[in-house]
Image (cartoon, rainbow, N blue to C red; front, side, top):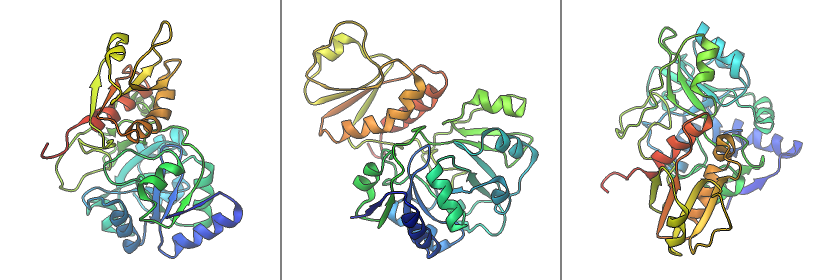
Length: 333
């Protein structure tokens, strides 16, 4: 099983040495936990793919400590710099033309690289100590529910990796927004996340189309997190625009329900397992709790899960994106 390290000065120095030597460390960020390795070491990057059982067609996000560090990996342009000033450090990934220093394995062989400057203070300290850009996709088996605590990482990858750095629960709770600015004249949002399309448009002074791609092909992708089936529980999941009190009362003990907000009215009696994303109906709180509540339901050994979609505003857009991908059928089903 993996060793879980608290973020003490000595453990951070130890884990920095592991990364410099080409090892893997599961790390906290404000979005989800990532599985980190030296982004400039092809062998270390390939170890990420093996541990996650992730296809090489799905590129990695490279984490850096600053815009200056990003400039060593990618060709910056005015649109990228404007977004960096507005949102870095934070939950925003930029797709840019890569420099030769970035190994092909990190980019699925493509001409662009996805870079992000995380805001989590523990991750930032680790970046300073190891003085490396860190490739770090989500620290979970490929395609399944993303981890937002060290315990989630241990449950999913504890038998495949040696080190987990515990930085507490993730503050944002869903993956970063990805914006392709490799052509600064036509930026595109490829994945919605912790930064909204409205915020992106305000920073650039123009509307930015949301492609929010969903693909099933195994050919190389422009960015991670675009596959139609992703973020998935092992238990079948069905989505609903709204789940009524009557439906909950009729549910059996082998069903689980993920509600956006607590049902109004008197205390509800139901045989089903019920988890609530936000008692006060906050999309941001729902995003922060989404994966943790899905983990709880998925571990309950139920026959069927049901989830209620969030309002399509703010962080609710990212919540619904993750739920729709989580509920998509696997290939062959």
